[in-house]
Length: 281
Length: 332
Image (cartoon, rainbow over all chains, first blue to last red):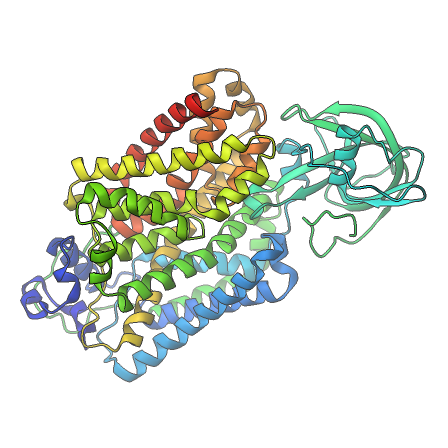
């Protein structure tokens, strides 16, 4: 069992010249000595031994599986990452199981190979996922980030008349870049969360994701008309209103922000995917 | 392991070190956290902290699958691919192996977290460091997924895709050649691995996966914390001030790419939204981001050693900025 190299002193290196890395030209003996020196921990530093690593990997894998299985992952990443999340959760659990299995088959109590202390940090995302499960990004990020409205490739035709349910991004793009062609004189329904800027002006916002919440960007619509008297930031609203040709500029990046003339608003529960803005939610 | 000090007293068989029982400690730490979960939640309720936690969790959740994928691939290379494969696949002369490795980066579809363990495994299998490092730099930037994302993010600017491809490949190769000329192997700690000999392939494979995930995963967490902090702290007004001046805008976006540590599959969308900046400045953002960022720096320091990362990252940064500006001047 060559795992015992953990406990080898540098002088013992001759005994492991069959060590396959030793044959590669890039391998330097000093590098190996250092790592083996750290691996053997004589001072009782707080290192993770293999059992603790297996436990941590198992818990992390279970947390990732749980997040992938439920809608929890939609707060942080795109829905498309789900298969990869489930796969990586399964791999983590398999790694934990394999570690325990090979430990039981081969190990003597002494040949644990502790990892550096930085590995303890893996407990942080685990705790954050299990205990805190932070919410999707909301009004704080929306106000501190400029609107990400971009001119789309084209505008698919909408039904000619009647009430319409639109996404926030769809409304903003059609209002700004299509002069509200299909939007005039008809009731429109949009769902988003409320954000108030520094002056207290209300916006209806959807955040959009490209990969994960670190790159989330808001699309904002300024609200006017019959706005509810009390607006709670981060509260989700289903707003019904009409097109308004008025525009304003986002104070953060000078991006275009269209207005919506509100006629009615009612609070709704947050949608399952807070970032998915296709107008259905 | 370079982060922690090695225990100096190496000689002699130490029979029973006073090692605290780490499974027990782990259990206690987790239970304590569960006990105080209400106060933890209360402390994280402020909007800044909440968005910090969300971004932190998001970066980890997003990067972990790619890290696991890269670790599986690197374990497979380390255990199942014989060194002779790379000797045959890559030209013998390092100067020629560098561009080949750079172009080979196009076949690893993923973001930068996957390329670090794979480059480490290549080095262990005898690939010359210059070529492995070129692969490390080019793989996250020139693969088809990233280029497609760039095309989607810049619908009106197809030259942006070409410019990104050319600039990333050039910068990666230039860095490989630079390492070949100036790099010293003693800066580079080859990724340590307990020996495989005498172990079954299964044991070696899973041992490698376990080692790499716990090791690189810890550094990934460090990088995610740094990225979340900067995302929460850097005020957008600073960027507006910088956008007006051509030189400052390039440097500001290069620095932003390092600080934000956005995954390379998504950075094009962020770059597209930075409309107040010139195309060259945004190209710099796209070229620097996948090569140097906080998350990547932490991963490199963990895999190749701190001495390496401290030299490699600034050199890459300078080179990537220079190549982007030149490419931008020619192509954009």
